[in-house]
Amino acid sequence: MINPKMEETLCRIARFYDQRKVGDVGCMGFRRSSNLKRLVPCLSAMINEGLLIPGSSSFLDMGCADGRVNVLLSYLTKISVGVELDEWTLDDYSGLRQELDKDLAKEGFFLVPRNIFLFHGDTMDPGLHERVFHKTGLCFDAFDLFYTYLTMQEEFAALINQKAKKGAVFMVYGLEKILPRFRGLHLLTPGKPFEGILALYRKE
Image (cartoon, rainbow, N blue to C red; front, side, top):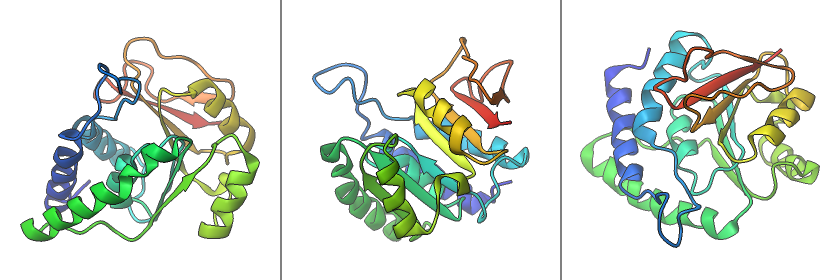
């Protein structure tokens, strides 16, 4: 259960980033952003079901773009790590974060925790995970939660099946009616995704 003040803070962060969202049309249409307003209630449901343990779970976004999901999850996890292949996308993080920090401080909300670590690189590259380990002390098999917005879901699922620890949860944002099955992963949302948008899989 997320306490009211924390939920209010998360909703304020969602509003901040969702207003700065790159959509599905235009010259940047390929760069889709997670709708954080829809993601917040999903996180609450995950906490209620024991899939996300506030202050304990470790989180890895395998295509973090400007780090917005990492910011949101930083409030509910012990550590929030993001990896992004496109450096110019990741470059947006600092400017947005500074603007967000000012807004949160001015409006009296909880400030963003200092547990966010973002890396430029390829999630499929073992060398990248060595860098993550040296910076955070966490190997791939130490993470509890993995996240992607549809991108490379099959490749990431295979990586999780091969290297993640048993019980790790794979969060796939953007799935609606058709829910794929992945080898070695059990679908936790067989009826429909949380909020109609987030499918969850657990490493068997």
